[in-house]
Image 1 (tube, rainbow, N blue to C red):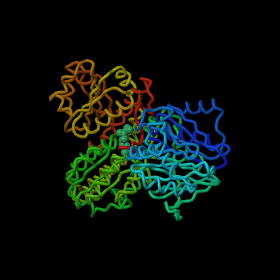
Image 2 (tube, helix red, strand yellow):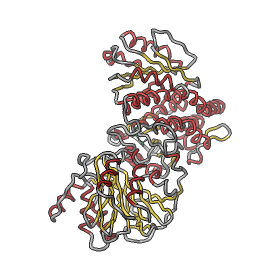
Image 3 (cartoon, helix red, strand yellow):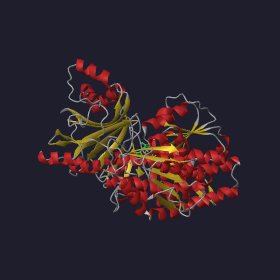
Image 4 (cartoon, rainbow, N blue to C red):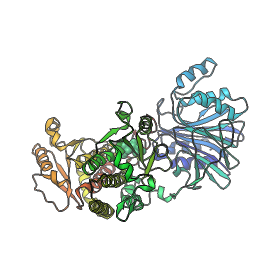
Length: 606
Ligand code: AGP
């Protein structure tokens, strides 16, 4: 999704904007641009494609020299990726960058065209720039206030006016924006990594607040110009944590960070060997009383919910429904005040998940967010939040965020089951102790990267692939399959192994490799039968199972073994080879692993 930056200070503004935008590349984009004051005039440069294109265009045009400006990486929603559709948008008087979607842009555009305005781009954003110009009569705050009252949808906006050549204005609704302060300098950005090189101190801009960055300082008012006092936050990530740290790709780095991420996430939530979510406002009394649980999320986060469903239902004996957020919103779900709706999201800004949260609140259900980004919209709007402490996840393909979402799901399930009396204290302690051992076990799986590289080398020329498993292994295969397709661009599907015979097995030939996950021992023989069925039809088969298990050649062409823990916890180990297989396949195919085509890290539009 789009990234916004802005700078006011003494440094070379173009350089700061480009550097900051480079830290937002992970969000996904297809063009970039900056607008900087040079000798009192707004100078704009924009280019389709990678930031490098913008940099060379800037260099060819002699650069823009100034100390105040705004920048943007665009992920196209209205109009194709092109120089003209890239941000910033505006004219010599007022220029803006925008993240989000203006829902009523067509009616505003028609109105402004009637007043003589001519539009150059196909974007919704240009209507906001022109509307600001229309309302501007010398008072920028008044123009912003009037514009804000007319636009509908989601937005984070960075705005500059020619008459105020040392000032950046910013406001937001439903799209994230932070305002950071350094020594005699101030910044706006869509996310914290953009400013870490310069400062760690920042504010979260709230809806209805206007930030004014001037003379290296920042002030906050409401849209009537009345001052607002805000609390400053300090990022606990350093720049290095947001860099690759010697790994070839962020994704590989993040896969290797999983043991640490789990430890950081679970350790503060365990007291005397028992899960304890009190710091997140969750008590056993509350957990005892829910009638139904809904887990609502998108993509990988939804897959973490599928594992959660198995675990919660098995040990907590309470019905759990897992929904894709974009479906949940519109399917008129039957939820009541006695239910709990759990929203899972790495970014905490996913538009569909956020709207699902709002719907659940409207229906009176209790809401719990499992979120990685501190202070994000979903975290702030939910009744309770359990932060996952994965640190910044930069690769578009989510790995460590999924892992800590699982870790939280387990802690939650253990505490809930104990509260409901379906899990004894002794069992709860045993499972919690096993959870604490998972990081070490993952380290040993990570040391087997050669096996995963070998499997990747066998898959690299495939066009289609199947993942199969039963129970928790099926839930987990869904994530393995998504990981492979999003970064290798190989078509893959995940199937419940027992369901193959009901149609899909007709696709199986020697051209359809099958990755089977069989870690659930009570289902092992049944999964193995299904693997034999596909092997008998010519498929090459790759099996992920416990390392102590040996299978015959008529089952698997290649086996990857993972250490044994309680079967309930096996997904946390079995997912690692699937992540590595996806990673190495993508590398072998020469793809852009961290920024796969057409994808954005944070999907802040519907
Ligand atoms: C994961 O690899 C994907 N890039 C994607 O499915 C992601 O998990 C989904 O968009 C949800 O994002 P969120 O966790 O930030 O809400």
